[in-house]
Length: 305
Image 1 (cartoon, rainbow, N blue to C red):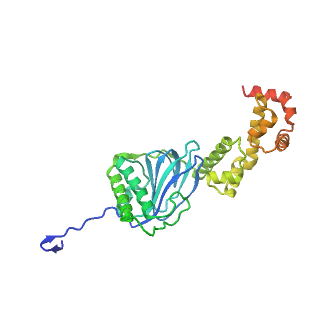
Image 2 (cartoon, helix red, strand yellow; image 1 turned 135 degrees about the horizontal axis):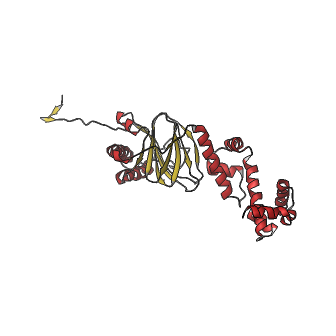
Image 3 (spheres, rainbow, N blue to C red; image 1 turned 180 degrees about the vertical axis):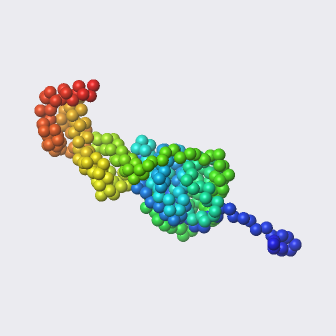
C-alpha cells in the first residue's frame, strides 16, 4: 500500500541493479608480453579492451577479446589475462559487489559495447581519479584510497555510471558474442601461451642484453615461476635458451659477412668480444674464425636458402 503525504501518493522505485561496494577501478597500459597468471574472488569483475587483442581464460573457457569488447567474471570464477605478444593492450578492469539477481545476465558473457557504455566507462575512470589518490594503473592495487578533498559527488557518480552501464548492456542483448574456443586442458593451454610469449620476447630482444629480472618485469611473472615454467616445457633453462638463440643469430651474421666479429658481438648485446668468443666456442665447439672458414658455415647457409 502506497504511503500518502499531503494527499500525494509516494511511489517507491525498484532498484533492478544496485552497486553495494566498489572494489577496484583500473586503467592499464600493458606491454604486448603481459601475463597475468590468474585469480578468483567473491565479487563481480569486468574487463574492457580499449586497445589491442588479449587472450582470457574464464574457468574452462578461452576468449579472444579485441578492442571494444568486454567480459564479465562472476564471483568465484577463475580468470587470467595473456597479451597476444604482438599488440600492447589497454584495459579497463572494474570490480564491485552487486547482489542484484539481474546480474545473472552477465554470467559467461562476452559483449560488444555501444557508445553509451563507452561513455560510462570514460566517466567512471574520470570520477575515480576525482575520488581517489590511488594509482589506477597499479596491478597490485588492493585498496582505493580516498582523496582528502573529494570532488563533489564523485563517489555517487561512479555508482550511478556503473549502474547505468550495466542496465544499458542488459537492454542491448543483441550485442552478445559467442564463446570463441573451449580448451579441454586449460592448464596446458595457459602454460603453452605463456611459453610462447616468453619465446617471442627473447627473439625480439636477441640484440639486447636481457636478464631474467628483465623478463620477469616485462611479463609480470616471478623469476622462480619463469624458470620452472620454461624448464618444464622446453627442457632447458630460459637463459640457456636465450644464449642459444644469440649464437644461432651470430652464425647467421657470420654467414652474411656484413660485420666483423667485434661488431657482431656488439649487435648481440655482448659487452666483451672475449666473452662472446668463449660462449660461441662452448656452444658450437668452434672458434669464430674456425666457423667463418668452415664447410659447416656453407652447410648452414645452404640450409637457410
